[in-house]
Image (cartoon, rainbow, N blue to C red):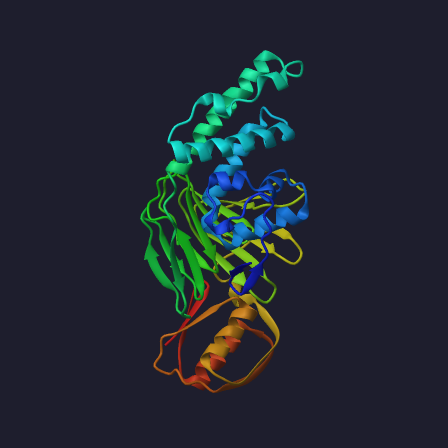
Length: 361
């Protein structure tokens, strides 16, 4: 069993007894479920690996390498032949680990089995692909990517920090960002759970990618927010400057979805309905949200902030000295401004709206 964020995932490997969190590239290749995930053979295996990679984003780089190698091999081999060659590759890796050496004849298919079925040129091409693929596996096994670093914000106040590439991140309350210590790959990949604002350092040769939920946001250099509304389990990606490409990650039985954003546009993704669309947006959009009915009864600050977040998608940050709240009020068809003004009158505070946050002083 795998436990993550209060959720439990059952893992029943068919060919590999390792915990997925300990997987190397060749472990992915030896896992029947992962191969089924690559070919999208059944929903059970597809959903297992989709959920596993979402909840353990540190596995994504190795999984990408394994998927790349599987794609390379399937350019020349049928699925049945691919299974045979993966077995051979795994034995070769095991032999290398013990003997620290490997003859290329160990990874070539049995030529006699192919006689009468494949042309000589096809055999040589497939063998060449396997040799190249084996080299890729061994290179990546020996050159493991550095483990991801992680920053978690466990408070209601956003925190701001810089990544090694010069990108500035403003991490929302109760959110987590995983990122590499050094950006040595072709793509700068980070993994977000929650909300954040990014001011990405421009680098045309190394795109910056944010993986969050089912979405991948790709930029060269821009400023944007990722906002979540827990009330309807929706995600908003709001573009402030530059340009942004957003992909749907891992849609089953459909073509990949891609949306390009310009400034003053945002992407809307709703988990419940699968809606994936673009709409006009500006920084004042949040002021126009209307709540049908919202009630506070002797509520402390944390309760008020949680309800405001759920209804309006806004984070309250209390920088005042008044922490002991007993706020009671009821609103119908109320905009955010009306609620905030009432809070400030009752608690004797002032508020400032900045992006997706309201600071109370």
